[in-house]
Amino acid sequence: MESSSAPASVPGIPPALRGVLPALVAIPILVLLEWGLAGAPFATYLLSIMGVNVILAVSLNIVNGMTGQFSIGHAGFMAVGAYIAGVVSLSLKEIAISGLPVVVSDQVFLLLCLLVGGLAAAVCGFLVGLPSLRLRGDYLAIVTLGFGEIIRVVVQNTDAFGRALGLSGIPQTAGLGMVGFWVFVVVLVARRLAGSSHGRSLWAIREDEVAAEAMGVDTTGYKVRAFVISSFFAGVAGGLFAHFVPIINPGSFTFVKSMEVVVMVVMGGLGSTTGAIVAAMFLTLLPEALRSGFTAMGAEGSLAQKVDQIRMPVYGLMLVALMLLRPQGLFGTKELWEVLPRWLPRRRKGLA
Image 1 (cartoon, one colour):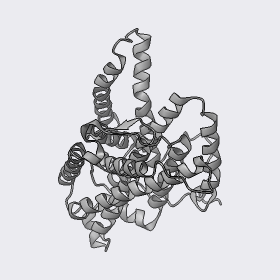
Image 2 (cartoon, one colour):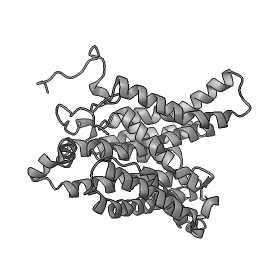
Image 3 (cartoon, helix red, strand yellow):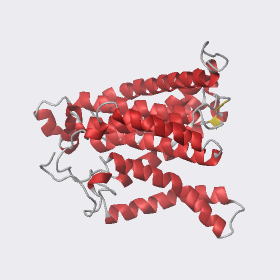
Image 4 (cartoon, helix red, strand yellow):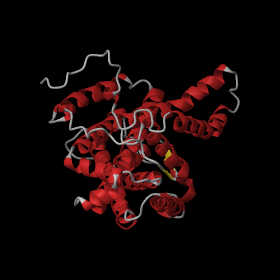
């Protein structure tokens, strides 16, 4: 796939994202959000799905957008994280940390399971990425697609993972606060990476890998690191998903799921973190908008089935229209604050 236009300049790390200030601001907001939506299970579920999709899109943007490598097997890494975190969580189900309230103990174990699932996905990313990232373009896409299908088939034929019936009974301990916390972490990591010296190496690889290598950039090393970081967060997203849905099965991690994430990244703009966030939020809410539209037309009989049937064609039409009208995506390589209307106040260049 042809990449969007090169960024005019690689942005540094925004001052607002430095130090501990982002965490001090985000954590109270997340606590208030979970407390405020405690009596709204559907809104909590929808926001949790949106958060998982944001994590997947932002993490894939590190590989597809910033590094310029085309990966279409993200659902495979998500599946690794989901099943490994789910199995670990089931093994710790009857245990509680003495001296801590049960709620706090559950969240500590959940965090541990998410880290284990993310690390397992990162190891898979390293094992897949190390040999395959010497490949380029379509060949890498085929390898990642094959990896995703291998993971799905392995899960489907393993007793410990529940085979085709899936894994059930996983403690439902992933609240909106935990999902929001990982959204905050992945966005912070992506933005800090984009403005760092490592990020500049990734941008250089994206624009011209041969020239970057000639300038002394360890292209394979940087690509593998980006792949491992992306895989880790995909595994965490899978672990979160496994802890707020009643059952996970191989049907949740198919090629269609990988393509959904690719559509989010392409629609937002390859290289734009906020673009990936906006596209993930929009495409998560789109099925609900379609259901509301069907309800308004009185087609309530097979509503969910109709939405599932037309969702992917709608995605395809949107991509075709986007490629014709704005091939670089909604934001290109820019962030949301860089495309705000000019009449909004902003800091003048050259002034502190």
